[in-house]
Amino acid sequence: MGRRIQQKAETRARICVAAHTVFTTGDPQDASIKAIASAAGVSPGTIYVHFPDRTALMLAAFEDELMVGMADAWASLPGSDLRAQLLHLGGAALDWGMQRPKLAPLLLAAAIARPALALPKATVIEDVARVFEIGQLRRMVRANLDSVSAAQAFVGIVAVAVSLPPARGRESLPKLIDTLMGGLAVG
Image (cartoon, rainbow, N blue to C red; front, top):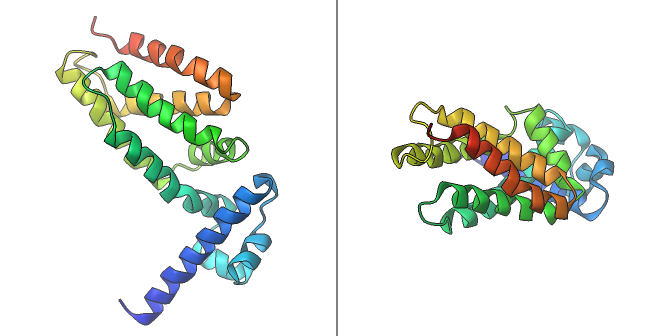
């Protein structure tokens, strides 16, 4: 890797670490590009070289953390029951969001509003779609199910649960998943 490319990657990483710190140490609504630039030791203009706006920076700053959390959930995915698998994955996302009550709604809103920036979302959709495809093979859901649409619906359900107060989100997730499963049932 050339020196310039390596330098750019290091600067981008330093900005992401600084953004993560700024977003998590205060009110995430108040995290400004200027504060993040100061924490990273760069100018605000340098941030815009790497990220088009604050939303893109926020999503990038938490991408790795969210993916690691979900990797743990995938590694401990329960057996063959589709509902149990969806509850497990949704519960992991809910746990992650509950640890960041002020930040999670902002990240979800950003990911939904700007899906092109939310790169992990595409991977999550593909992974969850595979869970639904296996459910099709096991005749747990309709054979003509569009697995990507089902996965998108599941991600939307999790987003709703995460946006609720913690106790209500935890209570609502199984009901929302049951509603989704009812619509996908073999009939």
